[in-house]
Length: 139
Image (cartoon, rainbow, N blue to C red; front, side, top):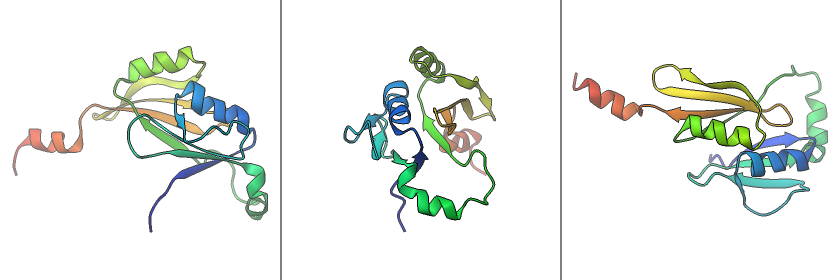
């Protein structure tokens, strides 16, 4: 089994597409502002986020009608400088629900939501797991 992508089902495709492209600055694999599908990637790494118009999945979603509602997705993006990313994205119109702050001793995070309420976490890694283990020394 191979994970190929995480796909968010959206109702207002053009608005969400512009948010990921223009506010978060992800690069579309191809221009598709009106949908019904798009794949966007950051400048580094191999991960991507795909968007799909919810109407295309209506028959499957109807089968889940009795399922609990709420946040079902958390998109996590790593950044080198969380404060700079927070400032830049805020200037592009991103509204953060939690500003930059610590999460444990190895991460700083900030949270925002896309136009359809999917939660996005920006992470700045303070120490990689390998570096933390090496600094403790052997056994």
